[in-house]
Length: 612
Image (cartoon, rainbow, N blue to C red; front, side, top):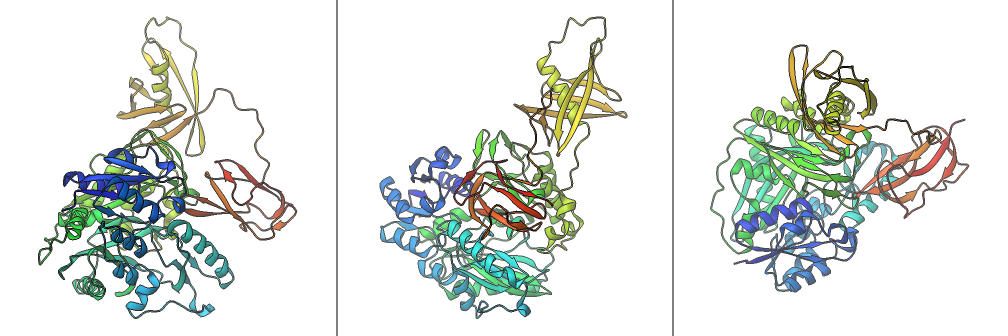
């Protein structure tokens, strides 16, 4: 029996594993980088061991340090979670060689399937050795890992070499392995996968299908189980292929076989030899705990001959600290409040935690289960719409709109969903009464009510920034209370404002953190009474859209270079992803302040392009 486990990961999956271990009476040990010294996963575990440094390559990708930590902590077993070293056969062997139990598949199965190139060969498929114009579009893909990192769609041969270079750099930073390959890119398909669970006695469960079609940057955003709209024949065929793949490598533990389904045909993508981010939807439908079952399998227990029956439908949405309208730029800062009532919330953060620049920007996974797909989708959209998420910008509004989009509700989506609909889905829709509610709540918090004079008070003016636009609010203190033109103020205090508009009473919960104000789900910034006289940056200035590190600058780029609008000038790495910074206009580069390795904050001046 396993009595103690070291979790070789961080964030929400580390917290998720700790939760199950605690329910089973198993002691847990966390590992953490310096950037994660006070992270939630270190606080919920029974003990924690430091991995010196902050970069993943120096910490969570150092198998030798993690094995040393496990031995020092005296644990029985190691659980790798997902990402990082979870599909690294060398790490699995090092754990076993140290006399510890590995809560994962055998190293030989990892070697056979964790490398996507090896997996394709095992399934009778081959990557493209050379690429011609007739092969376009193609997908450049990292051989190790997942999560959309190291992936690029190439539609022009001229850009292939640059995308290969970028993919290798991103894959090396995320997985410690820069191998990439090229395969045909199937457009207009759906991403469908099958959860497998196998024991060491020859039993293999296939736990239905999942649909993970809605993706940004090849990283899943919304997942559900079972995959909707599949014929019983196709669903059965996918599960049988997954079973054969697991049997072919003597698989043990949890894994996922992924397919792209187009025109009623299934195209094998890869087998992930680990737990998936979206595993909770399978847990909800089958009423199981996959982490607990992983531990049972690692202890040598046999699975029942058949899995439990499926019931209902489950949907999961990934909450990211990012701005979808600005190229999915990751966001950082203090997470003041995170609550999604009505949903299972798997998260690595709690109120007051800081979202930094070193790791993936996912805040949490919100999961719901209901008897039917329509009910589950409605339930999750409602839960997210009412959620309190106070802090950096997130993709919450995008998720709600995606769940309610007619293509999604009718299960007619494909992997090009966001390519087609992103602009409409990110169109600002601010509540016009939010600034007034913010101003009235602020007035209550700052004013002393009572002792009103008979003379009317002077009109008060406050300004707020909301959805990129400036709003001015005017109101008065009178003997009858606070008044505003066209709106009756029913109630106002520092936390709750009730307005009557055209005979309808509306309630606004208000929270304030310095200059940041949240009215319901609307975020505002209180502006100073007097405008800043400081001049803005010169036209054509490129400002860092996020904190990060300059990883490279375009070849031969220098002050005086002629550039075209949209031309890539430099690349920033933030939260394990590379972000391309392009010329805002056609003109001449008149300043260049970016050099490889430079750390920058949001708003840092990187370069200036002057138009003719």
